[in-house]
Image (cartoon, rainbow over all chains, first blue to last red; front, top):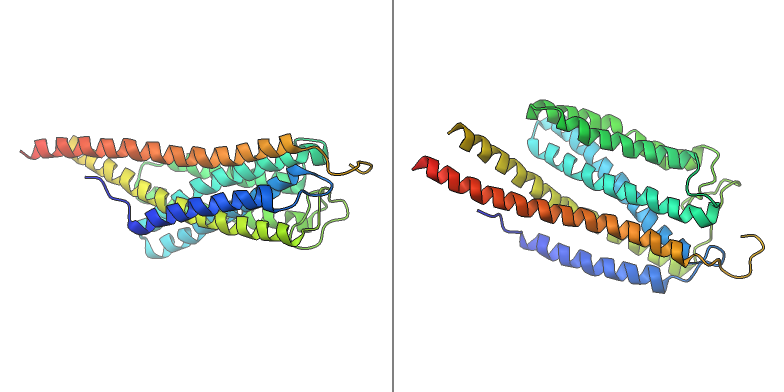
Length: 234
Length: 55
């Protein structure tokens, strides 16, 4: 008994595909080549958007954690777990693409800069969330643990965001003033800004689409697990 | 990059960056599709077993 995909989700998936193709076009062909860094600067549009999705996904997990603790509704645990998985992938994309950008601009793949360190610690915190959850058998205890961990772990997200604004860093600041020691900063032309905003919008829609699919997958997995228990006990 | 004439030749790094980002997103989508397919198969099998047990 397969669960058919809702029409709205099917439509959203197609819209997301079209938006992504347009975003890719804007980033590669519409936005001009940056005068100093050259083509590698184009990675910036998806690099920041991926970081944004990571933060948004972990925020969703924290909010769902609070909602689960208040309402004890299992659906919030499903959403929290689904969101963390997406957040981990996009944060990883953010970190690796940043490292690739840094090689020609900073002349190194990696440096122990506050932003790079805080982003990596954040990623590890959420990797631990998934691993630790798997070690808890009781679903209620697992959900309670996930809720509290999701709320406490979220502290790492504003720290990562603010790290380039609080600490002395070489990482450029997109919104706000750059540290004088920042390397790789640039002024955005109107086309660059449009490509950037469109990428942010597209990645946000992509996140919603992926989250919806992932929640459905989680529900199906739990349904299979319940049926397995029923068959085994029969 | 201070004394360079024109933009730096960094196209290779750009391609690598996009391969990583698009590769990870594609990997996530493929993993979800595969998991979904496996779960649908498990569900069909378990449904059959459940019906047999009820008979």
